[in-house]
Image (cartoon, rainbow, N blue to C red):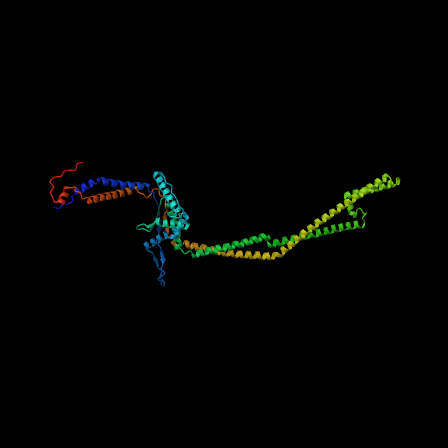
Length: 490
């Protein structure tokens, strides 16, 4: 007798494994819920770029006479794929990593109970990594390795794909830091435009003019510095005025020197005459008549004359050895000594004045010598300044021409239609909600998974269970007819 498995038997088998099915569903769904709760949220920022079609001149087919030059249009798919590769190119990624400093480790602050648990797990993981470094199982990456790892990570997490049935490219990036995700997407879009222009626009002409302008500006700055230093060292503002000023100064100093030398000759002759008279006539109290004009010396001379007159009067009445005569002579000797002292003072005064005038003469001579040297060097300095000014004028003319050429090249570049080929339609905003984990999606998928797993396990166990559970099993295996069966007593 052939026994077939009926729906009742299948349903009975599932009912017998109901507890197992329920436990498996609870475990799987609970694990998914706990994992979704503990999993760190991931935010996605996105930006869109529009790629406009462009044409290129046909360089293969030569145009005939009177025929307009043909253009070649690149296919939309090929052009989008090209721009996607530019977005994901290494120069773009390297500049993004460098500008945003993505190679440096960053930690996002966590909130709530789940965040605290994640922080604890990260702390434990960090401790294990530090321990592995200490025992030599791992090492701290170098600066170059960290940078390379950041570039690789950015390349792996950056999502660039075209929108369907359009010429729009979506740039997306996922990160646990929503602000960082938006910054990365916007920076990638900006660096892409920069790289796009660098590839599609010929900057050889403008870059050449820019280099030449920088070179000429540097040379012009050096020449202007030399001119300024030369003017400061020479003190020259205008050569004609400088020459007149030097000549006027020299004339003034020459007149002063002439008058000074005359005064020196006069004082020197006066001093020499006094010294000569004092040597030849030691008893002469006042060597020169003009010295008697000194008020003090004139007063002493008058007193001396009065005493001499008084002495003659005394000698007429008394003897030369008398006390009155001796007193008069003592007073006369004292006055003569005072007159000599006053003459010595006047002589020292003239000598001091002579030395002062001689020092002044030396100073004026040195000044005149310097002025003469300046007058001698003036033509050479004038020639040097003229050469520098002429070179500066030449460099300024060259710089003006280069600036005009550079502006013309920039205008030519700005008129290039390829500048409008790639435009950012929308910048990435800071995402407010995470895209992962999605609790409802995970719950739905977990429910389906738990049902599939639980029913599969139940059917598998039921298939491998060789015990006799149904009356049909007795008829199948023993080929005997079942007369009655006792139901299972709970």
